[in-house]
Image 1 (cartoon, one colour):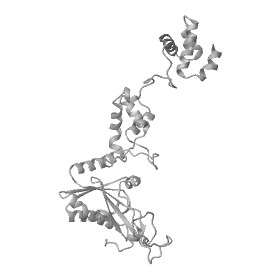
Image 2 (cartoon, rainbow, N blue to C red):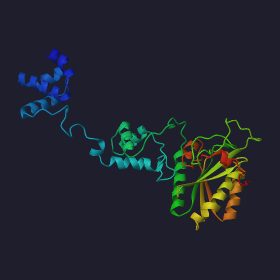
Image 3 (cartoon, helix red, strand yellow):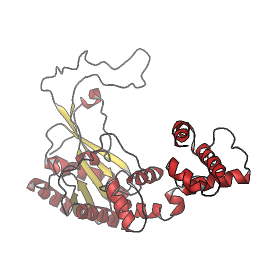
Image 4 (cartoon, rainbow, N blue to C red):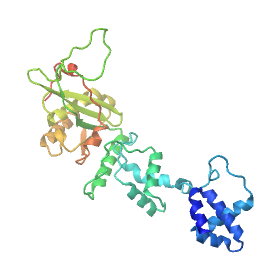
Length: 336
């Protein structure tokens, strides 16, 4: 019998194996279930299930189906409907990239999420957590930096404070902006990708090669201001240096052009920025220029800096700048 099982069972699906084992058990008579289970290396429950199927006289399943519809182990969310809500409760204040909730990101790994859910009474594996996150609309993005360095004990507290500040200002109807200097662009009649509608036979004339032939080789410095509440971007372009004075001048121009019209009753302004560049928290000039702006506008200005390493994430939220080189060649507006 063991030789027959070794030669035959590997070629059968699970239902066929049950029926073959059940047939052998019935031929052996009393004690056949236990004997067959020991020889085949399966549980007695499996052999008994095959015996019940034989005795019930069930019709063969159609097609290539092995189990009846609905057979097999149930999904964890069917057995435990509260697990999806429990998972979102762990992730929600910390998720990255959700446009409906500003400044949210994910800092928890699948393993940590699975461990916490299990501790809360929802036994689950990391792979199931991944499937539930995908079902909820989460996805892995390109260039996702998942290998993090040494963890700081106050990292999550800093992000949560940022999140709470944004929500508090938005609920009060106060403006919340994210600022950042963008990639510099050379000025001149240089070729650029893309097309635009022009009269037939009248394309914009640009240089044959991308080697600038102008006298000074000036560059344009786009500085983006992103209104988180209105989901609207605004860009100020300078041709000098990316200084703190230029950064605050860009915020001032946004306020004069858009902010004071969109928020006529505003008394406060929340600015989120990365920790480096012209808006670095180390620069006294940045703080002094903001103080001047606050005095001139009457706004109480709060600045929340993202920790180092958050620059790439923040850039995704700022307005996209794709300037045409020939348009930037004209004189730029005055700047400090």
